[in-house]
Image 1 (cartoon, helix red, strand yellow):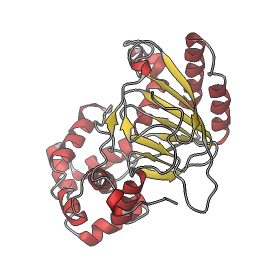
Image 2: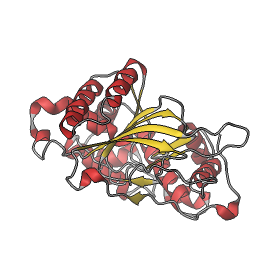
Image 3: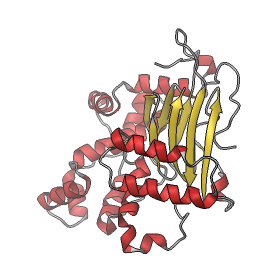
Length: 316
């Protein structure tokens, strides 16, 4: 449920802002902060640092990439580099307001130095950080273990925090309790790690996103048969090419709905949909609501919050 303000209060654009964090300037390897106050003290923003956030109590909703979800006690997420996000604690009529109590860990991808990613024995960790590019929820028994480890990180030395973080990352790298949040492709600069072929596929999509793209076109571009390309693509992504293409297009639609005041039909056309009916169907399948409802919810998230300002900042 969202407390949507009058239209006059809604900002026209909601582009994420870049934030400079303490662990960016070399003063801390790993930042761990307890957040207490009326809100999380953050806005719609992104940063190169990775982030693990545990909500102990309070909070109304979070937006990660193109997904908006209600918050609940124990919510635990891991967000990758430059993934736009925002945590809210709106006052919702008819419900009891609860102050925020949360833990937030932030660290730079190169917190172990610039050469660690070239070592073969760090492959599980590299896969984990790649998976975090779209953000994921941490669930089940893994969530309980990570919460316990995070609670140990407050008030200890920088070296001890780093050791605890490595233990957390090792646990996550083998966990089956991870669930992706944002649609693939929402991150401002998508990193592709599957070699030249996948990069060529992604570049082709970006170059032709506003036009019809047929499987035969991209197969020809890669000098593959359609059958060979289909098998290759599904083996790398776990999806058919049309499914993946629709997700990329809807992801771009979500960004334009959030950051511009263009009409929905114009956005759909710009993102390669030549049928409004198909566009509406694909959007609802992926996002679970209509484009108009999505824009309304985004606008509600970024309108001026009612009530007093929080006392503790997420990223002071």
